[in-house]
Image (tube, rainbow, N blue to C red; front, side, top):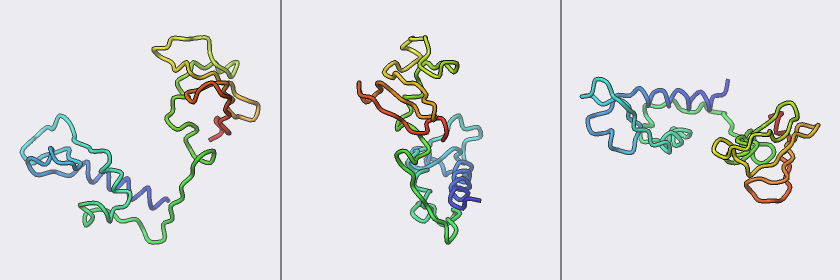
Length: 146
């Protein structure tokens, strides 16, 4: 399997299940349980702290964390090679008609992002006459095949 993802997932589970000392809930660390509290109503999770454990040796609790196995390689995919077809995901919030593979007829701006006017091409790209980038044409390659 993927040694990087395994270490990250195991370390997240470890942090979420760890019992913190009293008062640590206020610190910038993952804390879901304090020693004096039976049923914690919420967790304090500074999400940046979970990002730090992608490199466990830099975490403040490095000695307790599973380290990334030697020989594990990390590759970054970006742009059209990336797994997310759109930077912030707003493109997903347009009304869509699966039958016509284009913008649907609903225009309720409360539920949809109407800045987009897109259509699926025969090759699986998403061709947009406009989007959150403005009124210029843009094609999101392989949108439906990622």
